[in-house]
Image (cartoon, rainbow, N blue to C red; front, side, top):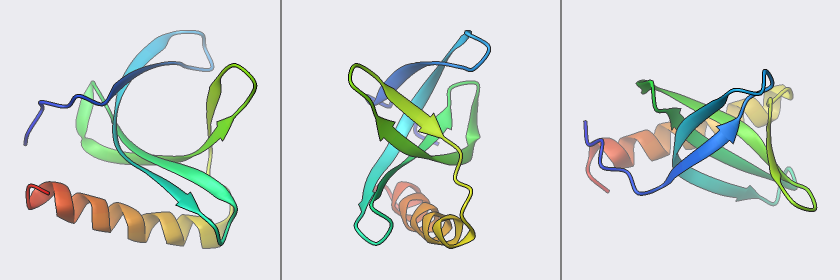
Length: 89
């Protein structure tokens, strides 16, 4: 697996600790009127995660995807992104 990411972000977790994530893709969904982020955690590059990316006045927030239709949509996008990463795209 290629670990040479140049899309590393540091985020603050709900317990006020920080973590580094590597962004694989950011997807604007006009169907759901939301922005989704697909990422990996620095301490576990094997698993892929997704969240709703919400923008506020001076920061961004990663929020849990709760809607089943949105979850199905983002799982399809994760499959697309991971296939591209696997194929070196």
